[in-house]
Length: 412
Image (cartoon, rainbow, N blue to C red; front, top):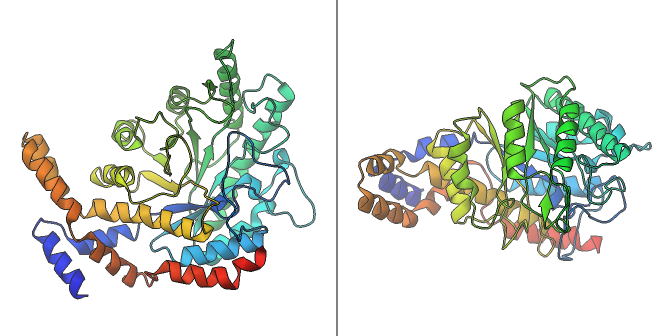
């Protein structure tokens, strides 16, 4: 408490109220992805990962069943402060006896997820799964020239909108449903327009279903390239941005899905003037879209700063998206989620009015100096106070290692 008081006094001299920052932080939702816990394998097939997705590592304790995955998630969520949601992929359908292919999924196949979310007092987000399936033909799904393939995936998209509305109605929290496809070509295609025309047609057909736009926010996510589709990606940034603008749906930006010199933090302020809502998948790409665990690094802090400085906390859907099988998977969840929340708190503790005034007045020397000074501000003491108020253990590694020794080692 003494250290927090000293930190609070420091920030007060800069015109920053730490109490207001803490109050605002605890109301910002961050959606935690389920697929970190089992290396993106899911429950609806026994096949291997495909569609440009690859998980590396063989750390002990991968969740193998819905019960194991939810138990691991429950521990992770208990070690993460603030408001959370749970982000689920369609491949995590939980069947009770009867099974269904992805074009025949129904809300009943996700009742266990609704029950889990209600138990935790959380909302659910959702993602159609357009990968790791025998109906992905030649790396193509919604853009396939094979009408049987294309129609299969269109129906999958429609079923996922129905499930998303079920999530929203059951939990009372709007559901963000994100569409991402792995479609593309390894080498230079002869026809670049054809696949995109078919993708557009497929999206139009998916969106033809009736749904409550106050409860379900359909998003479209782009990608610059992927494994096996290095030369051409159907769902490019330009395609996806033009489509969401035309259709009035929500753009989703994953900060691993752009060229290495592009940063999503710079794109946020370019998107907000044109969209009531935008969505983010926060990850950490190392040289490419490698989906490393999110850290409290420069880009994560800049993303949070753009959200907070523009008072867009209620306009930006924030979710994490990464998968690392080389380390304890629960620790990966907690570290990444806490890193996003740390970044948000860091942004809330910035003297944004002063910084903005210095920029507008052309006082760039002072702007640079103050910005650098804030990097060594006593942020950590405010974060520690936040954890204390949220009744969340600070030393989460100790808790996770105990769980590993009691539970995870038995899964080997």
